[in-house]
Amino acid sequence: NTFKNPQENLKRSFVNWNPNARLSYKFSQTKGLYFNYYGSTQQPSITQIQPVLDNTNPLNVAIGNPYLKPSFSNRFNLQYNSYKVLSQQGLFFWGTYGFTANPIVSNITTDQKTGASTYTYINTSTATSNFNVDIDLNKKIKKLDINAGIDISASGNKYLSYVNNAANTTNSNTYSFGVFAGKYKENVIDASFRGSVNYNTNHYSLQSQINNNYWSYNLRPDFDFFLPKKFQIHTDGNYQWNQATQSAPVYHQFIWNAWIGKKFFKKDNLLLKFSCNDILNQNNGFSRYPNSN
Image 1 (cartoon, rainbow, N blue to C red):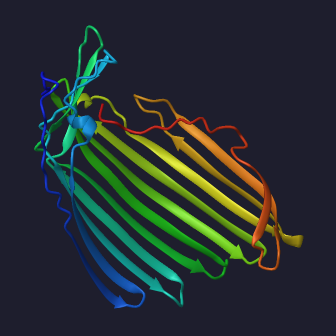
Image 2: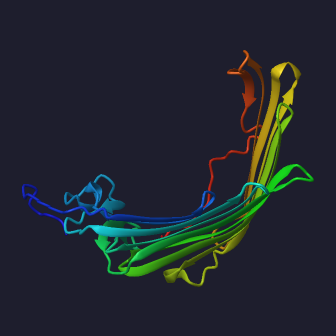
């Protein structure tokens, strides 16, 4: 897969296709159904096809594959919106499904004695795919003078890679249930709260004995208080908790931000504020996500 003669020329010629279609139907001014299709050709990158061997890192050697072929991605989107003005009630549905034919995937070979790894890319006949579904229902609760809603969603992806020439299929899915509540009174308060509970599944065909499924939840309060003399106090937070798995410990952090400010001029178009981010000093730059290898 590499050229022995550095003077040898490599010529490539491909045609990119980007078909798309859109269909919409409006039942009324506040209710509609929409469908979209997008297709796109994905060419291999220069680093993936580069036939010149790079020996600067002998423990991680990248070998280009000049014979890679383009892949083609297809994406289907479906959306439904409905809103009742008098009751201030809305229902929103959004779904998408995509798959990639002839995908370009990584192939990593590791020498068990030396620990050195060789990285290259190949085309595979197995398609990769992903999906996302989201249903949002919100309504004005007049007795409490608040807007409230629920959100139900699911997302996932299927990815393929090769480890020591063995196919490894990764299936990752997330199922979520969220709630929302908000209250706004001009020049008095603007407050909202969002919370969600999620269940995450991760399965790797080459390590099927490992259980990497876990629960997580997220809490996001956000408050603005409007004081006399055009003073304003703002505070918001983001708390994230992830259950421990066989591959990772418990993860949690709370990012708290706040500021106090004063507005000037008739239209309040100048705001001077003193702010502090990450008051509890918990933004450690650490995150957790599944990966095929």
